[in-house]
Image (spheres, rainbow, N blue to C red):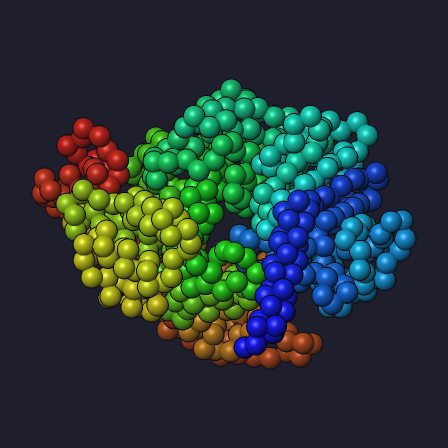
Length: 622
């Protein structure tokens, strides 16, 4: 290179360095992007939330600017509830402005709005119809406002990782807001979230609801009580504390600075939904009136609270970071929900709410549920997890024949893994050790979820044995579980208490309405199934005898192998079906002690059932 050319080249280099330095300095001093929502509800009786979304200072984000437009979206689902819910269907009145001037805006697909602009500060306004009071939707009426963020707050994909702020303007006369979001000091009803994921993972209750507080594991907890219900706040606080502290013993480490329970009381509750430092629980107004209802409610508390660890932190790799536009598939909901269902009962047993016998009866009930459902031989629990998006929340009359619950079977498999670990380590480890391993290895160390194979390897490491058969047969397969092989080391056996009576079994469920007895479901491979009885058939006669409201009366005295003639009305046409009654396939299991259990069996049983300083076992004395 010639000298003069070299000097020119160096000059250009220094100019470029200077330009880059200037750009970098400007970027360092430029304000960070800001996302602020203002939520108002001037006419709550109309069920409309009004939302203003201000996006500011995003000039430095070339991904937003290069095309001359900004896209904003509404999630199609909410984490923890595995169904596409199309929240955008409730949005209306969308507008965009900058500097007081309207900006061109159009909807480009089912949940995306495009704003054409070259400005760095835009304001969006829209309304959301909220009239579905469930744990996964939003509701606004004259009594309160409740919202799940995914169904209310639009997001901008490039800004999801930045802090978000929410300013709530309660309806006139409402003076309370309860949420797990961090309050902004000095600004009433103003909250911040580190990112969009946290924003939509923090439900909000607005109104004049009652609250009480307690401290568990050194963490302040708030309970927001919506609905007309009578309760003893002192007793409730003590029981919440007991359940929460028993749950915290599993991992031994609490992930929150504070925690919020939002509890709705009304006639048709829909369960609970977990969040990163809060939960929404829905229960009946009768929840605190008798022991059975109360323990059922405490079980719900334990379930959603334990999700703090399992799902919100210990999770399959597919469950975060979230894709809010599409299904997030995983074959591991049997762990995420099933293990949590296991712990809801195990936690209450540890806390003393269930006796050992009551706990065993709960497990036997879950086993009955699995073994009496024909779908358990059709769908594996891994497949049930993967197909949650299309089957779990959309049951039909054939669901019992073709599906199995990843909650119930997952809970049973968690119990069996717990027994496997206890038996193979002589009681020195249990399922808690597996959960702690996943907590430390994946949540804390690797800061991500685990794969299916990583979970299996972790279980094998803690159990100190190969689990190929367990996963092949019971997780990915549909083989009948050999329960006694798991409980024998604990001195127990599973016995079927059904006494054969040779009574004929049809296998059809019915409903009676408007004077008509109609088939609501038909059990796979039953007499009704093989004889051609269909869902929707109106049953008119059995052997020329008019059938009333109760099909069992018409079948009384019929024996296995008897042939019956069933006249039905199918779509306005009468048809006669010839059906041969079969043997009743339903089972009813319970746990019993084996004769002369050894000391080792007794010791393992006591370790499993958290029986302290007892020589006897849970099932003796029956």
